[in-house]
Structure formats: C-alpha cells, structure tokens
Length: 397
Ligand SMILES: *Cc1c(COP(=O)(O)O)cnc(C)c1O
Image (cartoon, rainbow, N blue to C red; front, side, top):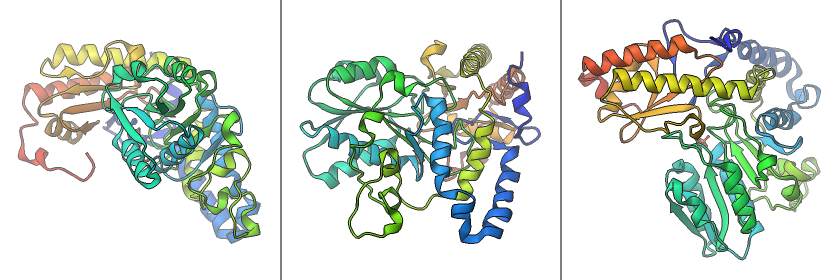
C-alpha cells in the first residue's frame, strides 16, 4: 500500500535513485523551483527594495513559523524562523539560563548532536558564571533531573541511532523540579507528531532542511512558550528583534513576544523555497505518516536482518521508540555506504560505524525499501565495498 502515493510525484527524485537520506537533506519539492524563480523575477526583480513592504518579505518569518508551529503543536504566533539551528540553540539556552538564575547545571544527553553541546560550551565560557554542562547516557536523563538543574536540553530523536526520548514524561518531571526545558526537534518536525504545548515545553528549536524539505541551509525555527515570550531576554539582540527597528534608537528594547528572537535580515529566497515545501504538508495526517514510517522501518529492519546478518541494528527495534530513521552498525560502514550510493541507494554514514537510513513516507514506499535492501545485500555479501575508491572521504559523510 502506498499511502502517500500522490505526494511522491510532488518531489523531484532523480531516476534510478532510492533516497533514504531525507533525515539529513530533504529532496527538492517540484513547486519550489517556480515559487523561488517567480519571487526572484516578480518580487526582487520588479519591486526591488519595495518588496519588503509590497511582497511582505518582512513577515515571512512569522507566517512560515506558524505553519511549522502547526506541525509541532505550537500556539499560533509563538514560532519564528531565522539563522541556523546552532544559533537558535544558543538563543534558547541563553534565555533559559536567564530564567533560572539560581541554578548552574545544563543537563543533556551524551549522544546529543555535537553542535548543540558546542554551543552550550561556548555560552558557558562567555557567561563565565559557573555553569556546567552535565552529560549523561540516554537512559539516565530522568534520574538526573533534580533541583540543581537549571535547564534540560535534549534532542528528542537521537541523530545517530534514531532513539527517541519521552518528551512528555521528561518535560513533566523537569517542570515538577523547576527545570526549564529546551527540545531540539531537528529529527522530529515532519517526522512524527509533536505537541510542544501539551508537553508544556519551555523552548523548542529545529531545522527545516531535513524532514521539512526546505533546501540546503534553509532557516531554523525557534518556539518560546507563551508564558515566557514577553519575559525572555534575547542574548543576540539584533536590530530586527528590536521593538522598533526602523526607529534606529541607540538603545535596545526587545520586541513583543517571539519577535525578539529575530536577529538580522531574513533570507527571503530560502524562505520562499521553504514556503513552497510546506504546502506539501497542508493535508498530511501526521498519525498516518507516523504509522507508515513505523511500518516501513519495521520492514527495513526485518529484511536487512534476514539478508545482511553482518549488520547490527543500532536503532530501537520497537517502532514507537524510534524517530523516522533506522541505523545499522557495520565495521566497514563508510565504504559500504559509498558502494550503496554508487548504486543509487543514498543513505549516509556517521562515525565510527553507523549506516543511517531515513524513512520518509511522503516519497519512500515499500518498493523503495525492498530495492534498497536488495542492493545492500549485494554490497555486503559480495564485498562490493572492498574497493579503494570507496575509502576516499568527502568533507560531508
Ligand atoms: C542537523 C542538526 C543540527 C544542525 O545545525 P545547523 O546549525 O543547522 O547546522 C543541529 N542539531 C541537531 C540535533 C541536528 O540534528
């Protein structure tokens, strides 16, 4: 059953390619080409600087923020786009620490994406106020939530293993212990149902170029819970987060609510590509998407285990515990992934030995899964990876 058959044709997928890397960079939505080139010609070309007002470029970050907000359960008016996810992590963490001034510990998961941890380390150095980044294993988060912790900063779905944290339970425990929560939804938005308002998350951040298909380097999003939106102090006090940017005052006054999480001039061309990508989500039933993602993931796991016993499952076997990717460990994972890519099956590799496969039901169906496993079986059983050409490492793996 191809539940989302009508969606697949709305993406440009090169012939002969089975794309299992939408967890890292979503494919091109066909509508984005025309939407972006129309904007360039009719808006940038014809309107020049008047486009900021006439074509409403300035409010795109809020309009698109609300559309993503709909996918993550955010209250309208509480999500804004801009910058990269690393920057949004920094902003959220600085604001969160400021809300909990008596406490010094930032609790996170050892498996968190390194940039989130690097940004925390950098912020701790700049603040020079005795903060500490405490990293524990995935399963030890809950027991480490206590009254010394200022902020719990987690990525809901682990980028390597696809293992999921229980966002509701951890948020509840954090709140009961006076801990502010930041959820990184990089591998959640567009991958599974998320409800930040039901979880009572304090902050959420994420990127739009993975499951949301906004294009390489598409802008990130930040959510601030309504109860904090008018209180938080922006660490990156850029002019577009000012209450009156065009007053050009010399002193900074934060704008109302989520406006203050804006920094500088928005990337309008990139926002237009993302806007087109988001039209594909308008009629998607996230519960149906989730069910199909789990079914395809289960199929992939059982077929790989049956046909490629040299690979070891690195993701949770139980679908509910996974995000929307499946990872396997294999000692020769890097050259094996290169061999797969050379044969039109695109996944990716994460050091030291993880082969990652994104399961994205909008454009991946059972046939794609079965084709990918057939190629994988050929690569592994016939040692096709054992070729010096596949050992050469690119900048991006
Ligand atoms: C993909 C990803 C990032 C990437 O951050 P950028 O600033 O957009 O490069 C950060 N954090 C997590 C958890 C990610 O999965």
